[in-house]
Image 1 (cartoon, one colour):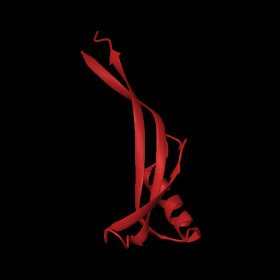
Image 2: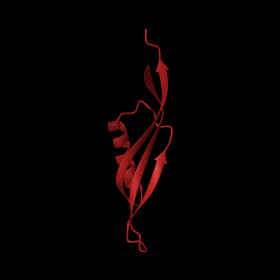
Image 3: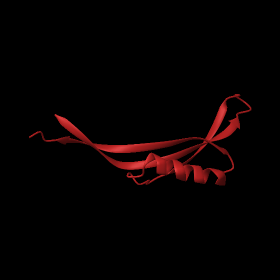
Length: 78
């Protein structure tokens, strides 16, 4: 039995450095997510837009994440 994966949804998430938590002493982060990203968008395109948006924020950019959701379908073997 074979299956195919069709990407149906993509989200871009920017993770920003929020400094050290004074109580626990651990690194703290804030995130901004952008839904309904075109599934055809390349990694280079998403990186470029993320780097363009970063200076508009109060915190420094720590990392960029892309989260994709796919629909798995069974295919017929002929």
